[in-house]
Length: 406
Image 1 (tube, rainbow, N blue to C red):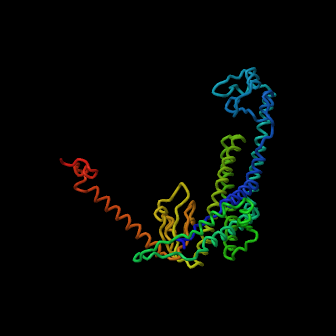
Image 2: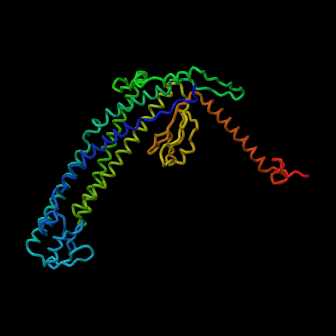
Image 3: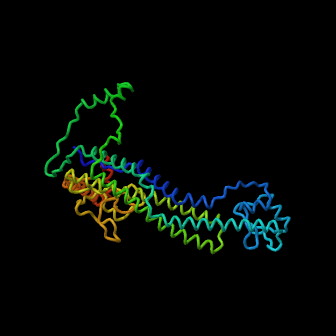
Protein backbone atom coordinates (compact mmCIF):
# COMPACT_ATOMS: atom_id res chain seq x y z
CA UNK A 1 0.00 0.00 0.00
CA UNK A 2 1.37 3.39 -0.93
CA UNK A 3 0.51 6.93 0.03
CA UNK A 4 0.24 8.06 -3.57
CA UNK A 5 1.30 7.14 -7.05
CA UNK A 6 4.92 7.85 -7.87
CA UNK A 7 5.29 11.19 -9.75
CA UNK A 8 6.39 10.80 -13.37
CA UNK A 9 8.35 13.31 -15.46
CA UNK A 10 9.15 13.56 -19.15
CA UNK A 11 12.57 12.09 -19.89
CA UNK A 12 15.16 14.88 -20.20
CA UNK A 13 17.10 12.94 -22.84
CA UNK A 14 14.26 13.13 -25.35
CA UNK A 15 13.69 16.81 -24.61
CA UNK A 16 17.32 17.50 -25.54
CA UNK A 17 16.95 15.45 -28.72
CA UNK A 18 13.90 17.43 -29.80
CA UNK A 19 15.58 20.77 -29.00
CA UNK A 20 18.69 19.71 -30.96
CA UNK A 21 16.52 18.78 -33.94
CA UNK A 22 14.76 22.13 -33.86
CA UNK A 23 18.07 24.00 -33.67
CA UNK A 24 19.46 22.07 -36.63
CA UNK A 25 16.37 22.73 -38.75
CA UNK A 26 16.34 26.47 -37.97
CA UNK A 27 20.08 26.82 -38.55
CA UNK A 28 20.13 24.86 -41.82
CA UNK A 29 17.06 26.57 -43.28
CA UNK A 30 17.80 30.14 -42.15
CA UNK A 31 21.11 31.02 -40.57
CA UNK A 32 23.50 28.76 -42.46
CA UNK A 33 22.83 30.40 -45.87
CA UNK A 34 22.97 33.85 -44.25
CA UNK A 35 26.40 33.19 -42.72
CA UNK A 36 27.61 31.75 -46.03
CA UNK A 37 26.72 35.00 -47.78
CA UNK A 38 28.43 37.11 -45.11
CA UNK A 39 31.42 34.85 -44.50
CA UNK A 40 34.91 35.80 -45.59
CA UNK A 41 37.27 32.86 -45.90
CA UNK A 42 40.36 35.00 -46.48
CA UNK A 43 43.31 33.95 -44.32
CA UNK A 44 44.85 37.00 -42.66
CA UNK A 45 48.60 37.28 -42.44
CA UNK A 46 50.35 39.98 -40.45
CA UNK A 47 53.07 40.22 -43.13
CA UNK A 48 50.67 41.34 -45.87
CA UNK A 49 50.76 44.90 -47.12
CA UNK A 50 48.24 47.66 -46.53
CA UNK A 51 46.54 47.02 -49.89
CA UNK A 52 45.95 43.32 -49.15
CA UNK A 53 44.71 44.16 -45.63
CA UNK A 54 42.13 46.55 -47.11
CA UNK A 55 41.00 44.10 -49.81
CA UNK A 56 40.66 41.30 -47.26
CA UNK A 57 38.42 43.51 -45.14
CA UNK A 58 40.71 43.42 -42.14
CA UNK A 59 40.88 47.21 -42.04
CA UNK A 60 38.51 49.78 -43.51
CA UNK A 61 38.34 53.54 -44.07
CA UNK A 62 35.54 55.48 -42.34
CA UNK A 63 35.10 59.03 -41.04
CA UNK A 64 38.55 60.16 -42.20
CA UNK A 65 40.53 57.31 -40.64
CA UNK A 66 41.62 53.72 -41.14
CA UNK A 67 39.97 51.50 -38.53
CA UNK A 68 40.06 47.87 -37.53
CA UNK A 69 38.14 45.60 -35.20
CA UNK A 70 41.46 44.00 -34.21
CA UNK A 71 44.82 45.55 -33.30
CA UNK A 72 46.78 46.82 -36.32
CA UNK A 73 49.69 44.58 -37.32
CA UNK A 74 53.17 46.06 -37.32
CA UNK A 75 53.40 45.83 -41.13
CA UNK A 76 50.11 47.64 -41.69
CA UNK A 77 50.91 50.29 -39.08
CA UNK A 78 54.28 50.92 -40.74
CA UNK A 79 52.62 51.37 -44.19
CA UNK A 80 50.05 53.79 -42.77
CA UNK A 81 52.69 55.89 -41.01
CA UNK A 82 54.67 56.06 -44.28
CA UNK A 83 51.55 57.56 -45.89
CA UNK A 84 51.49 60.24 -43.19
CA UNK A 85 48.59 58.85 -41.14
CA UNK A 86 48.47 59.85 -37.46
CA UNK A 87 47.42 57.32 -34.82
CA UNK A 88 44.75 58.66 -32.46
CA UNK A 89 41.96 57.02 -30.42
CA UNK A 90 42.66 53.58 -31.88
CA UNK A 91 42.62 54.65 -35.56
CA UNK A 92 45.01 56.10 -38.18
CA UNK A 93 43.72 59.50 -39.42
CA UNK A 94 44.50 60.75 -42.92
CA UNK A 95 42.53 62.71 -45.49
CA UNK A 96 41.21 60.59 -48.36
CA UNK A 97 42.58 63.03 -50.96
CA UNK A 98 46.12 62.23 -49.75
CA UNK A 99 45.77 58.49 -50.38
CA UNK A 100 47.69 57.01 -53.36
CA UNK A 101 45.84 55.49 -56.32
CA UNK A 102 46.46 51.82 -55.35
CA UNK A 103 45.00 52.41 -51.87
CA UNK A 104 41.99 54.21 -53.36
CA UNK A 105 41.45 51.29 -55.75
CA UNK A 106 41.62 48.82 -52.85
CA UNK A 107 38.99 50.83 -50.97
CA UNK A 108 36.77 50.83 -54.07
CA UNK A 109 37.11 47.05 -54.42
CA UNK A 110 36.20 46.60 -50.76
CA UNK A 111 33.17 48.89 -51.13
CA UNK A 112 31.99 46.95 -54.18
CA UNK A 113 32.37 43.67 -52.32
CA UNK A 114 30.38 45.03 -49.36
CA UNK A 115 27.63 46.20 -51.71
CA UNK A 116 27.50 42.80 -53.42
CA UNK A 117 27.20 40.99 -50.06
CA UNK A 118 24.40 43.26 -48.90
CA UNK A 119 22.55 42.76 -52.18
CA UNK A 120 22.98 38.97 -51.94
CA UNK A 121 21.81 39.01 -48.32
CA UNK A 122 18.72 41.03 -49.20
CA UNK A 123 17.87 38.62 -52.00
CA UNK A 124 18.33 35.65 -49.67
CA UNK A 125 16.01 37.13 -47.04
CA UNK A 126 13.38 37.72 -49.72
CA UNK A 127 13.61 34.07 -50.82
CA UNK A 128 13.43 32.85 -47.22
CA UNK A 129 10.33 34.96 -46.62
CA UNK A 130 8.70 33.44 -49.73
CA UNK A 131 9.42 29.84 -48.70
CA UNK A 132 8.75 30.06 -44.95
CA UNK A 133 5.26 28.58 -45.35
CA UNK A 134 6.53 25.43 -47.00
CA UNK A 135 6.82 22.17 -45.09
CA UNK A 136 9.91 22.16 -42.96
CA UNK A 137 12.16 19.32 -41.88
CA UNK A 138 11.03 19.69 -38.26
CA UNK A 139 8.94 16.53 -38.44
CA UNK A 140 11.89 14.54 -39.77
CA UNK A 141 14.06 15.67 -36.85
CA UNK A 142 11.63 15.32 -33.99
CA UNK A 143 8.97 12.78 -35.03
CA UNK A 144 10.94 9.76 -33.85
CA UNK A 145 12.11 11.50 -30.66
CA UNK A 146 8.52 12.54 -29.89
CA UNK A 147 7.26 8.99 -30.46
CA UNK A 148 9.92 7.54 -28.14
CA UNK A 149 9.37 10.28 -25.53
CA UNK A 150 5.66 9.51 -25.24
CA UNK A 151 6.27 5.76 -25.25
CA UNK A 152 8.66 6.18 -22.32
CA UNK A 153 6.18 8.44 -20.51
CA UNK A 154 3.39 5.91 -21.08
CA UNK A 155 5.54 3.06 -19.73
CA UNK A 156 6.59 5.12 -16.69
CA UNK A 157 2.97 6.02 -15.93
CA UNK A 158 1.88 2.38 -16.12
CA UNK A 159 4.80 1.34 -13.93
CA UNK A 160 4.04 4.04 -11.34
CA UNK A 161 0.39 3.03 -11.01
CA UNK A 162 0.88 -0.70 -10.45
CA UNK A 163 -0.19 -0.11 -6.84
CA UNK A 164 -3.72 0.88 -7.76
CA UNK A 165 -5.04 1.51 -4.26
CA UNK A 166 -4.29 4.50 -2.08
CA UNK A 167 -5.03 4.11 1.66
CA UNK A 168 -7.60 6.25 3.43
CA UNK A 169 -6.77 7.48 6.93
CA UNK A 170 -9.62 7.16 9.38
CA UNK A 171 -8.64 9.55 12.16
CA UNK A 172 -11.03 7.86 14.60
CA UNK A 173 -9.23 4.49 14.45
CA UNK A 174 -5.71 3.67 15.67
CA UNK A 175 -3.42 2.38 12.95
CA UNK A 176 -1.80 -0.92 14.07
CA UNK A 177 1.95 -1.37 13.86
CA UNK A 178 3.21 -3.52 10.99
CA UNK A 179 5.91 -6.11 11.61
CA UNK A 180 8.53 -6.54 8.89
CA UNK A 181 9.23 -10.17 8.15
CA UNK A 182 12.78 -11.38 8.69
CA UNK A 183 12.64 -13.12 5.32
CA UNK A 184 12.99 -9.72 3.61
CA UNK A 185 16.33 -9.16 5.31
CA UNK A 186 17.39 -12.70 4.42
CA UNK A 187 16.74 -11.93 0.74
CA UNK A 188 19.01 -8.87 0.92
CA UNK A 189 21.81 -10.90 2.51
CA UNK A 190 21.44 -13.62 -0.11
CA UNK A 191 21.64 -11.06 -2.92
CA UNK A 192 24.92 -9.56 -1.68
CA UNK A 193 26.47 -13.03 -1.43
CA UNK A 194 25.96 -13.60 -5.16
CA UNK A 195 28.74 -13.11 -7.70
CA UNK A 196 28.61 -10.32 -10.31
CA UNK A 197 27.59 -12.78 -13.04
CA UNK A 198 24.79 -14.18 -10.89
CA UNK A 199 23.56 -10.64 -10.13
CA UNK A 200 23.49 -9.78 -13.84
CA UNK A 201 21.21 -12.75 -14.47
CA UNK A 202 18.82 -11.39 -11.84
CA UNK A 203 18.74 -7.88 -13.33
CA UNK A 204 15.67 -6.81 -15.27
CA UNK A 205 16.42 -6.48 -19.02
CA UNK A 206 16.54 -2.96 -20.44
CA UNK A 207 13.37 -1.55 -21.95
CA UNK A 208 13.25 -1.55 -25.76
CA UNK A 209 11.01 1.36 -26.73
CA UNK A 210 10.74 0.11 -30.32
CA UNK A 211 8.76 -2.87 -29.00
CA UNK A 212 6.35 -0.72 -26.97
CA UNK A 213 2.91 -0.27 -28.56
CA UNK A 214 1.83 3.30 -27.95
CA UNK A 215 -1.72 3.93 -26.80
CA UNK A 216 -4.11 5.45 -29.38
CA UNK A 217 -4.67 8.56 -27.30
CA UNK A 218 -0.94 8.92 -26.63
CA UNK A 219 -0.32 8.59 -30.37
CA UNK A 220 -2.89 11.32 -31.07
CA UNK A 221 -1.24 13.59 -28.49
CA UNK A 222 2.17 12.94 -30.09
CA UNK A 223 0.80 13.79 -33.55
CA UNK A 224 -0.77 17.01 -32.25
CA UNK A 225 2.51 17.85 -30.54
CA UNK A 226 4.45 17.48 -33.83
CA UNK A 227 1.87 19.54 -35.72
CA UNK A 228 1.92 22.32 -33.12
CA UNK A 229 5.72 22.39 -33.13
CA UNK A 230 5.81 22.67 -36.92
CA UNK A 231 3.18 25.43 -36.84
CA UNK A 232 4.97 27.49 -34.19
CA UNK A 233 8.34 27.16 -35.96
CA UNK A 234 6.84 28.42 -39.24
CA UNK A 235 5.10 31.28 -37.45
CA UNK A 236 8.27 32.24 -35.57
CA UNK A 237 10.43 32.09 -38.71
CA UNK A 238 8.06 34.35 -40.64
CA UNK A 239 8.14 36.93 -37.86
CA UNK A 240 11.92 36.60 -37.42
CA UNK A 241 12.68 37.10 -41.13
CA UNK A 242 10.52 40.23 -41.22
CA UNK A 243 12.40 41.60 -38.19
CA UNK A 244 15.81 40.78 -39.68
CA UNK A 245 15.00 42.41 -43.04
CA UNK A 246 13.92 45.60 -41.29
CA UNK A 247 16.99 45.68 -39.05
CA UNK A 248 19.42 45.00 -41.92
CA UNK A 249 17.90 47.80 -43.98
CA UNK A 250 18.23 50.18 -41.04
CA UNK A 251 21.89 49.19 -40.47
CA UNK A 252 22.77 49.61 -44.17
CA UNK A 253 21.20 53.06 -44.25
CA UNK A 254 23.36 54.00 -41.27
CA UNK A 255 26.50 52.79 -43.08
CA UNK A 256 27.07 49.55 -41.16
CA UNK A 257 29.63 47.15 -42.60
CA UNK A 258 29.14 43.42 -43.19
CA UNK A 259 31.10 42.44 -40.07
CA UNK A 260 28.63 44.47 -37.97
CA UNK A 261 25.73 42.80 -39.75
CA UNK A 262 27.32 39.39 -39.20
CA UNK A 263 27.55 40.07 -35.45
CA UNK A 264 23.87 41.01 -35.53
CA UNK A 265 22.94 37.66 -37.10
CA UNK A 266 25.06 35.78 -34.55
CA UNK A 267 22.98 37.47 -31.85
CA UNK A 268 19.77 36.50 -33.62
CA UNK A 269 21.01 32.90 -33.87
CA UNK A 270 21.57 32.86 -30.11
CA UNK A 271 17.96 33.99 -29.67
CA UNK A 272 16.81 31.25 -32.06
CA UNK A 273 18.67 28.58 -30.05
CA UNK A 274 16.96 29.66 -26.84
CA UNK A 275 13.61 29.77 -28.65
CA UNK A 276 14.08 26.18 -29.86
CA UNK A 277 14.84 24.98 -26.33
CA UNK A 278 11.83 26.88 -24.99
CA UNK A 279 9.49 25.42 -27.63
CA UNK A 280 10.70 21.86 -27.02
CA UNK A 281 10.28 22.12 -23.25
CA UNK A 282 7.04 24.12 -23.30
CA UNK A 283 5.19 21.99 -25.86
CA UNK A 284 6.44 18.78 -24.24
CA UNK A 285 5.14 19.96 -20.86
CA UNK A 286 1.70 20.76 -22.27
CA UNK A 287 1.39 17.47 -24.17
CA UNK A 288 2.79 15.48 -21.24
CA UNK A 289 0.29 16.98 -18.79
CA UNK A 290 -2.59 15.96 -21.07
CA UNK A 291 -1.28 12.39 -21.32
CA UNK A 292 -0.77 12.14 -17.55
CA UNK A 293 -4.23 13.54 -16.81
CA UNK A 294 -5.80 11.07 -19.24
CA UNK A 295 -3.97 8.13 -17.70
CA UNK A 296 -4.79 9.08 -14.11
CA UNK A 297 -8.47 9.58 -14.91
CA UNK A 298 -8.54 6.16 -16.57
CA UNK A 299 -7.25 4.81 -13.26
CA UNK A 300 -10.29 6.30 -11.54
CA UNK A 301 -8.55 9.40 -10.17
CA UNK A 302 -10.89 12.35 -9.84
CA UNK A 303 -8.29 14.70 -8.32
CA UNK A 304 -4.59 15.47 -8.63
CA UNK A 305 -1.97 16.82 -6.25
CA UNK A 306 0.05 19.84 -7.39
CA UNK A 307 3.78 19.13 -7.00
CA UNK A 308 6.59 21.61 -6.37
CA UNK A 309 8.38 23.23 -9.32
CA UNK A 310 11.93 22.13 -10.12
CA UNK A 311 12.80 25.49 -11.70
CA UNK A 312 14.70 28.28 -9.96
CA UNK A 313 12.13 30.83 -11.14
CA UNK A 314 8.77 30.06 -9.56
CA UNK A 315 5.40 31.75 -9.90
CA UNK A 316 4.07 32.96 -6.57
CA UNK A 317 0.59 31.82 -7.58
CA UNK A 318 1.84 28.28 -8.24
CA UNK A 319 3.79 28.22 -4.96
CA UNK A 320 0.44 28.55 -3.16
CA UNK A 321 -0.74 25.36 -4.88
CA UNK A 322 2.12 23.12 -3.69
CA UNK A 323 0.78 19.81 -2.25
CA UNK A 324 -2.82 20.99 -2.59
CA UNK A 325 -5.55 18.82 -4.11
CA UNK A 326 -7.59 19.91 -7.15
CA UNK A 327 -10.27 18.14 -9.22
CA UNK A 328 -9.44 17.33 -12.84
CA UNK A 329 -12.77 18.75 -14.00
CA UNK A 330 -12.15 22.09 -12.26
CA UNK A 331 -8.40 22.88 -12.21
CA UNK A 332 -7.11 26.09 -10.59
CA UNK A 333 -6.17 29.38 -12.26
CA UNK A 334 -2.64 29.10 -13.66
CA UNK A 335 -2.32 32.64 -15.07
CA UNK A 336 -3.46 35.58 -12.98
CA UNK A 337 -3.39 38.01 -15.92
CA UNK A 338 -5.74 36.07 -18.20
CA UNK A 339 -7.60 34.00 -15.62
CA UNK A 340 -6.67 30.84 -17.55
CA UNK A 341 -7.35 27.58 -15.73
CA UNK A 342 -5.35 24.44 -16.30
CA UNK A 343 -2.99 21.74 -15.13
CA UNK A 344 0.68 22.08 -14.16
CA UNK A 345 2.96 22.81 -17.17
CA UNK A 346 0.07 24.05 -19.30
CA UNK A 347 1.46 27.59 -19.21
CA UNK A 348 4.82 28.79 -20.46
CA UNK A 349 7.90 28.26 -18.24
CA UNK A 350 5.97 26.17 -15.71
CA UNK A 351 7.90 23.17 -14.43
CA UNK A 352 5.47 22.14 -11.70
CA UNK A 353 4.30 18.54 -11.59
CA UNK A 354 1.22 16.57 -10.67
CA UNK A 355 0.23 13.10 -9.54
CA UNK A 356 -3.21 11.52 -9.64
CA UNK A 357 -5.19 11.11 -6.41
CA UNK A 358 -7.52 8.14 -6.19
CA UNK A 359 -9.11 9.21 -2.92
CA UNK A 360 -8.55 12.84 -1.85
CA UNK A 361 -9.97 12.16 1.63
CA UNK A 362 -6.69 10.43 2.52
CA UNK A 363 -4.73 13.65 2.04
CA UNK A 364 -7.37 15.75 3.72
CA UNK A 365 -7.25 13.55 6.84
CA UNK A 366 -3.46 13.41 6.79
CA UNK A 367 -3.35 17.22 6.71
CA UNK A 368 -5.71 17.31 9.70
CA UNK A 369 -3.32 15.06 11.62
CA UNK A 370 -0.32 17.24 10.72
CA UNK A 371 -2.21 20.36 11.78
CA UNK A 372 -3.20 18.72 15.07
CA UNK A 373 0.42 17.79 15.79
CA UNK A 374 1.54 21.31 14.97
CA UNK A 375 -1.10 22.80 17.27
CA UNK A 376 -0.07 20.54 20.17
CA UNK A 377 3.60 21.50 19.91
CA UNK A 378 2.66 25.17 19.54
CA UNK A 379 0.60 25.04 22.73
CA UNK A 380 3.41 23.30 24.65
CA UNK A 381 5.94 25.86 23.44
CA UNK A 382 3.61 28.72 24.38
CA UNK A 383 3.01 27.25 27.86
CA UNK A 384 6.76 26.95 28.52
CA UNK A 385 7.59 30.43 27.24
CA UNK A 386 4.82 32.05 29.27
CA UNK A 387 5.22 30.06 32.47
CA UNK A 388 5.26 32.19 35.65
CA UNK A 389 8.13 30.06 36.96
CA UNK A 390 10.23 30.43 33.80
CA UNK A 391 12.36 33.23 35.30
CA UNK A 392 12.26 31.93 38.84
CA UNK A 393 15.94 31.15 39.35
CA UNK A 394 15.58 29.03 42.53
CA UNK A 395 12.98 26.96 40.71
CA UNK A 396 15.28 26.51 37.73
CA UNK A 397 18.16 25.37 39.94
CA UNK A 398 15.99 22.95 41.90
CA UNK A 399 15.34 21.10 38.62
CA UNK A 400 18.96 19.99 38.75
CA UNK A 401 19.11 19.47 42.49
CA UNK A 402 20.85 22.81 43.05
CA UNK A 403 19.98 26.04 44.78
CA UNK A 404 18.04 24.31 47.56
CA UNK A 405 17.65 26.09 50.87
CA UNK A 406 19.80 24.76 53.70
